[in-house]
Length: 418
Image (cartoon, rainbow, N blue to C red; front, top):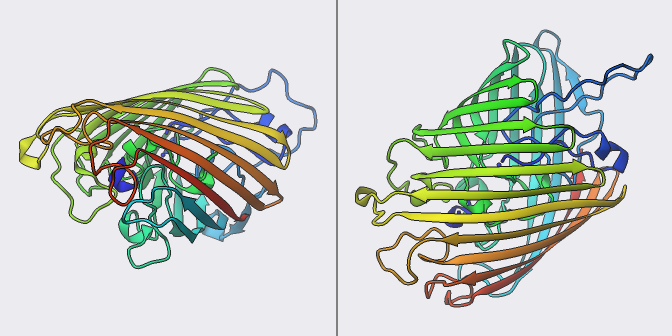
């Protein structure tokens, strides 16, 4: 979603990164906003098995980085045990054909966040607090350190927080600021294989306020949410997903969401583009997860119906596909890649057409490569990406005049995760 820097996800599952052995023990991938489906227990248990490692369900992590294990915890007495994680990181970026509102080079703090949660008992909670930036392919960079920063433009200094009621082992209800059920990437840099979010993510909601019900039956997890879509503060979206953990290696997800009403333009909100917030969107996501490789191909379709009362004069669609992958070469080094294509309906230059990308009828291809080095809780990684636009409307592409069709970016992010 272009002007929100999009506004995670059916992707990916807990992926321990500090060793290939840890990878082999990782459960299958699950979408953001959902509990991890239970995997089948072994036929017999070891006579003296060690205590189970605590796995924190949020924030979602698809791969390259991992929090401390075991996580830091505080026993609060009558309020139970609380777990605390954090991440502190900065990045540098250089790019070709910067947009008029962007810079050729910059440095910024990418994360300064703390995560607090309670994961047992009938009453649980999660709170994510701090500062962040959300770099995304093909869009201007939204700085954390300036007056018009990512916190102001997007989800505030508490981007995700919710209470969770767990009456049984198979049923839970969440309410608050929730990670989306749509798509295959999470929102924040530290959660994903790549530093930047991709072109498909740009079409998806990222954080929604609302209520979500989750139900698990064996290898299948179902989730249904009533929410405000692209952070609109209008509670007229329904989202749902079905996750099938076929076995510990293979997972299949179907996710969908849509506006069941009409939402007009939200002034000053980067996170709530009018067209996408009045759309319906669908995903089919498959994940293969077997050390040392994780690979996730997925397809996405979205539709926006014409509605002249809110300025949408013609129907529009997107047709998208992506492959995300990560390979662990050593306990300290891994390499990720992402290839994507997004196409849109309409005719190039149509003044009445609905713009979902770089003008009606436009398309875009991207490729991103991300090597990651980790040592204990320190990490350093780099993104090298290319975005190429087809059939752009003049003035809506890259460069100061909007008439360039390609953009190359290089990012370096480093920090600690604990």
